[in-house]
Image 1 (cartoon, one colour):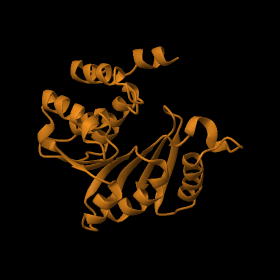
Image 2 (tube, rainbow, N blue to C red):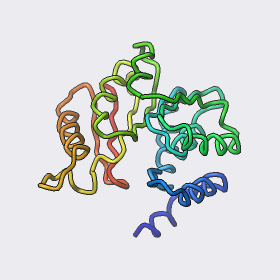
Image 3 (tube, helix red, strand yellow):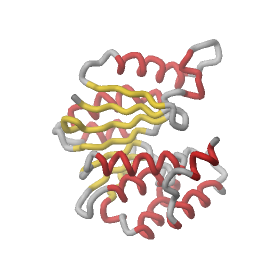
Image 4 (cartoon, rainbow, N blue to C red):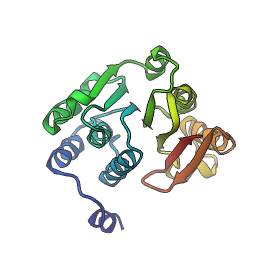
Length: 206
């Protein structure tokens, strides 16, 4: 099924393909989004005419590359991550793709970075793919900083089906289960959970 999906989805270009291939060789666990998800994020960001974006959790930079490519030349993407080694891989590919001037990378705890940002409606696109127990705090911090109709994407919100509950759920699973329930009851957001990859939740700020 995945091969069929990719055969009928905008394929990654040479730079993206090279980044995907290099990340696959790394010894660490692969936290990278799939190329189909990257294509979907590019389409979404372009569809909402995103100009100012923020990302929480960058890893080796594929999602950042996708979002930055969707921004206009004067657009800006703020990336928040705690790992300088992993994000250094991304920096090389952002340069190769010609989008590094649109990306600002801040190394440090994302909660602290968010707290230091003005509480102003600045961003029209956000992507969260970081520590799952931190998601609720990230969503809360993003809300006042998103413009009306701004779009927030949360990755891994199905947790391999463990959101259905059971004895084998981890703290990360329980955090996402609680957040999923909170979001669908929160009238400030229009919420859609899509069965893309390991679950991708779309939030539109009303």
